[in-house]
Amino acid sequence: MLLRHLILVIFCWGGVALSSAVLAQEGEADAEKEPLMGPVIPDYGPVLIPPAGFYSLDAETHYKVSIDIGKTADFPGDRNLKLTSVARFLNMYAQQGIPKENIEFAVIVHGMAANDLLSDEAYQARFNDPNPNTELLNQLQDAGVKIYLCGQTAAFRKIGWGEIRPEVVIALSAMGAHVRLQHEGFTLIPF
Image 1 (cartoon, helix red, strand yellow):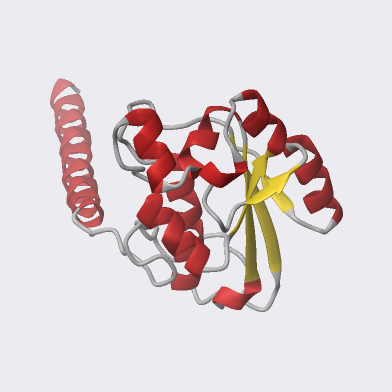
Image 2 (cartoon, one colour):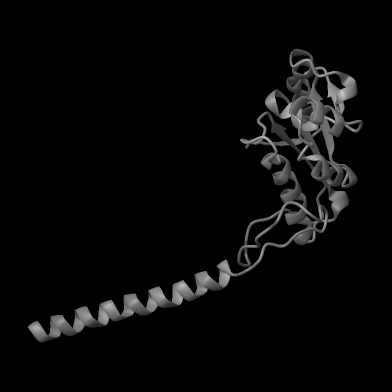
């Protein structure tokens, strides 16, 4: 009886060890995959593709998407990671066959993130550094992303209209921009 239990324990532990080794190899294979860049935003928004069978968007549907950005990077000179998330969204779904024309994207900026929309000259004057978001914002603009700045934020933070990048649309408020975009059919990404 003891021998039978010992054989059973050895067999079970052997199965666990073998399963762990196989899973570790599969995990290593997945971990070795490099993120894919582009095609919509060539230099930002890397994407790691999960295994087949994932839930995704329909390539035939036209999507209107918006995101709220109120926070800037944690450290001066760093790019705003929420802007990078916009690039990732566009790249991820283009890589899955969603035509670029089928996604309209709007970004509503307020709070501390307003500084990320300053022109290079204004950013340099305020922070003694070049705007780390400039190239990413240029590529988002080239991809047709609409960027709205809360006019209340700009006024309270004493940001002059001439200090803001020229493609940015000044909204009366971020709240009003969200209401209007939702009325126009945009879906807000809540994070």
